[in-house]
Image (cartoon, rainbow, N blue to C red; front, side):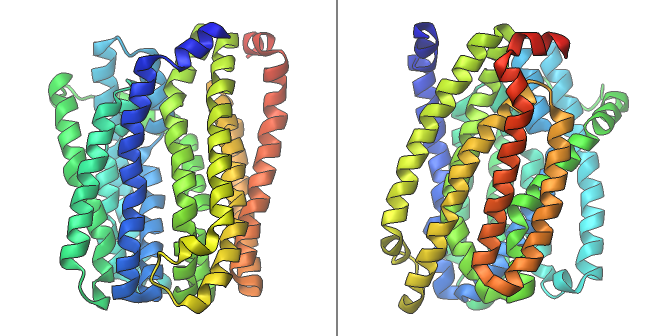
Length: 427
C-alpha cells in the first residue's frame, strides 16, 4: 500500500493532475460564465433551445468518437512505447471517424428535414453540427492514452477563449441564440486542429499508405460498443429534448440552468475517469491486485472530494441561483429541483469507477447490454413522468435508472473483486 500511495502521490502525477485540472476547470466554467449573459439576451426559452441543440450535437459526437475514448485509449496506453503501432492506430481511427461522420451527417440532415420537432429549429441544429466536426478532430483521446495532459489543457483553454470572445462579441439580440453552439464548435475546431497537426507531424501521419481493411475492421469490431455509447449519450443528453417537447422551451431552459451546474460534477467525474483510466488499465495489465488497489484509492479519494462539494452546493442552493439572471420568484423552486438533482452526481461518482472495471475486465458486451436497456427504460420513464410531474419527474427518472445501473454493475463485478485472479484466468 505504501508503494501504491507513493505511485498515486508521485510529484509528476500531482503535477499532471494540476495541469489537467486547470484546463478542465476552464472547460467546465466557461458555460457558467456565458449563461447569465445568454439568459439576459436570449431569455430562458432561448437558453432552452440552445441546450436542445447542444445535446443534439453531443449525442452525434458520441457516435463520431467510435470507441476511441475507451478501446483506443486502452490499446494505446498499453502500447505507448511502440511508435509504429501508434502511427498505425492513429491513421486507422481517424479514417474510421471520417467515414462514420459522413454517415452521421446524412442521417442528421434527414432528421432535420423530416421530423417537425427538429425542422422548426433546423438552422440552430445545422449550426450546432460544428461541434461534431470539432469532436472528429479532437485528439484528446490520444493525449489521454499517452498521459500528455499539457496538450489537453492547452487545447481546452484555447478553444474556450475563442468561444467566450465570440459569445460576448457577436450575440447581441434574442435571435442570435442560433449562433451559441456554432461558436462553441468553432473554438473546438480551431484548437483541436492545432493538437492534431502536432500529432500528425510527430508521428508522420500520412494518407498515402492508408488501408481500408483495418479501418473497416474497426468499424465492424466496435459497432456494438459504439452503439452502446450512442445510447449512453442519449441517456445523458436526451432529457432536455423530452422536456422541451412535452413542456416547452421555457421549462427546458430551467432544466438547462440546473443541469449546467450539475454538469460541472458530471464533467469533473468524466474528466477524472479519463485521467486515471489509462493508468488503471496499465496497472491492472501489469499486476491485477496492485491495479485494483490503485483503482480503489484513486476513486475513493475523489468520491470524498465530490461529496464535500455536493454538500456545499446543497446548503447554498439559493445563493448559487442568485448568480443567474432569472426571476427572483423562481429561485426557491429551482433550488429545490437543484437539491434533488444533486443526488445524480453522487450516484455517478459510484457508477463511473465501476464502469472503469467493466472495461478493464473486458465486460464490454455486458456493459453494452446494460447501457442500451437502461437508456430505453430511461427514455420511456421520462416520456411518462415529465408531462405529469415536470422537472421533478424527469430528475427522479434519472436517479432511478442510475441506481439500477449501479446495482447491475456491482452484481457483475462482485465475482471479479472477490477472486480477481481466478476470474481473469477463466476469461
